[in-house]
Image (tube, rainbow, N blue to C red; front, side, top):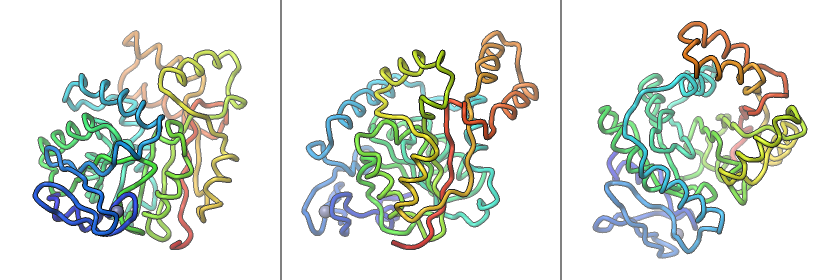
Length: 298
Ligand SMILES: [Zn+2]
């Protein structure tokens, strides 16, 4: 999308007022914040407004994505993630989609256009990621139906009630203030629209022998917390959203599948058979997936 088209959807992330395009930068018409546009990507955050955790995560992911190769071969786990996000009966009613934490490969945003023809927005706190994401979408000829922005997940730069579907995969656990993201995601969601959340499952639900590995992963990735379904429901219900579907993945069977995959013993149909068994309602899975619907315009 051109900046002019993107402007129809965005507002100042801090005061939610109109942004004006002035010689390659966006000026807030109210709080006077100025947001630069770098390589066609609007940077809709101010460094001095990021919290400590966001600064750490931005540095970490900028470093990570700087060396990330710009190739696009979807791995099995990514294909599975796409199925988990897209394959629901409500998908035919969706026209606008936002992926929060899209990363450099931004496969959710790209495939949302390719498979569903949704108008798709990808946002991330890492400029390195978003510049690569934009390049990839352009390479694939999807410029007209995609937009990529840098922003804080706690201050989404979008107008109220504009998205039919939002996904936040492995995002909430990284934030110092996860409730700020939930508030803002619900604000920008249309009435009766959907939010897909994927988060690490609560320690108490998983096998204790996995706790040290889980803890190590948390430490390396900078995770702030885990979630039980009850816990997540409480957060969402407070904001007028109801749970419509949930499932877990990352059960013990996944570990066997990963091992067999590493040994090149599992491909194609067989891989998917194992995957199908791994995605279920057994709460011992490492990841919790939940889809909520917004009940009313707030
Ligand atoms: Zn403003």
